[in-house]
Length: 155
Image (cartoon, rainbow, N blue to C red; front, side, top):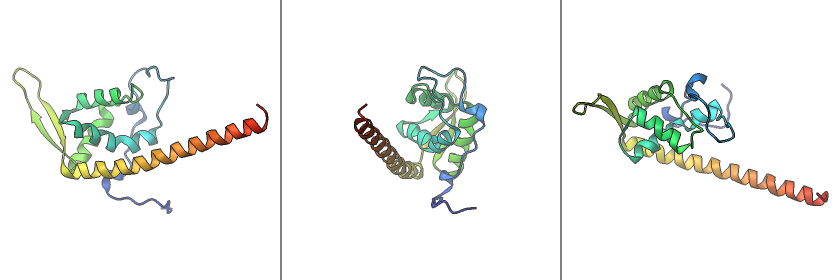
């Protein structure tokens, strides 16, 4: 494998296999029909789910709804993507799961973040902040360079 300059810190940073059918469920919402690429969806999966569970214990369907809500409808995960990720996070010790059957209700598996999951979330948040800042700087620089070029050309 070629050296890309990136290090795998632990299994939470390992690539996530995402079937293309699992990325989108139904019509896209009014965001200019934006489609988030499979690689970006995979890269953001762990910190997104851990951040949602950091808000409080939740179950699969509620997590799916929260992802949709947080992304303004641009990310519509299916259970085919979420549940394998939750099982992997459970195996890694980043979340704990338990079954709850409310009276007269349907049995659901609830997930909550563990201290190890919070540590992983904090590390991934720092990494995403660096990436987001670099992108903002690059786009700002591109805008300034285009503006200067347009001014120089009298546009």
